[in-house]
Length: 473
Ligand code: FUL
Ligand code: CA
Image 1 (tube, rainbow, N blue to C red):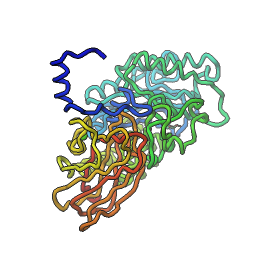
Image 2 (cartoon, rainbow, N blue to C red):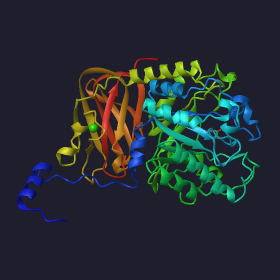
Image 3 (spheres, rainbow, N blue to C red):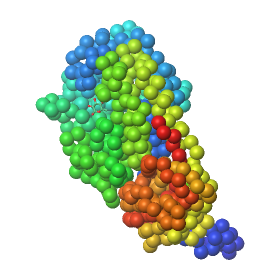
Image 4 (tube, rainbow, N blue to C red):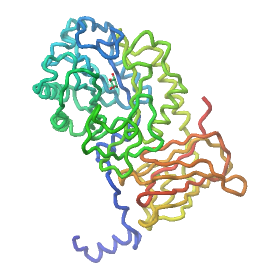
């Protein structure tokens, strides 16, 4: 450490409060800058679109006539407008699904929009969508399936370089990409291909260093293990991936669903789920769009369980988001906004059983509405009690907890109690928190709530405790 001059040392002591403790040391694997920014996005749109939209298939065979792709009214601005109005932060599109069809005129394929009937082969869906995202202030992301049922070189060593070239086109021609989504799926009894993910990831890193890379096992974001929208109640953002791969080589779904406590790498979960039964549009599912209740429950089991929500809204044969889907999305946004409208704990007094010495670690930071301020205990203290005085009898049915994850995910279990007459009464006991944990329960009326940190792997560091009274749906 550099020597401090006396006046400098003096002012240093003044600003830190004299004997203030240092900030807690990071614990275990921690998020990088890209992952921290990604975690704050919370909710964004997936779009599955391609020949399958015109054949009512989920997995095209790659031998479909490209001429069938002809979305005559395609309007990417309608998609972006819808996502924006829905409260989403980005759109990720299937640039190339398993059938190999490219939604852009790739030089490395003969199965693309160029060979389609749409705009006489002059169209480019990625170009239109990336421009629309820019216009509406959304981030743009791309899905590409390594598994390719069309490309003649699939199954030969040359294919890896061809796929890398395709990736490069996508990552150099359409502006910044915030997330690269690699699908690990592959049908049984299909051609074998050992993927060179090291090569694929390096293409993304070179051209979009700010992007996060998703696959079953990351490296930046992992699959959450099911397509129903339900992350584990226990959900660690850390995962052990050494020796694992994508698809059949991935850790068991149950492991992806909960992560590994003390896992070696920071690889948080993303929840991908479709607003309809299938990933691609089909008129047969027009009456099967998920209900508002289903979507709210998914929100709580994704964003509310330390994950981001990637909600698929398939574009129809005209090239538009169907009105039933967009109407539902608006209802969904309204319900989210109404549920988390007024934080009844904001600015309320918090009493902590232990607080790390130093102004920047105060319990008051828990209710200041800012996620960049936090409360922490002394290093050796791993359990704590936080009592929030709501000031008056208050009805509530949601509590939102957030860890300050820049320092790692630390809390292993906690309970919540509320003042009932003169005694505190147990409300619930739960496990992990992470970026965000939403707790939902039948409405109670109380003046005080208490959070007990029961177990932590390092001194707890929480940034926010918020309390809400969500209206009934
Ligand atoms: C899966 C694919 O097989 C589905 O078609 C869809 O793209 C989904 C998001 O991922 O692995
Ligand atoms: Ca705070």
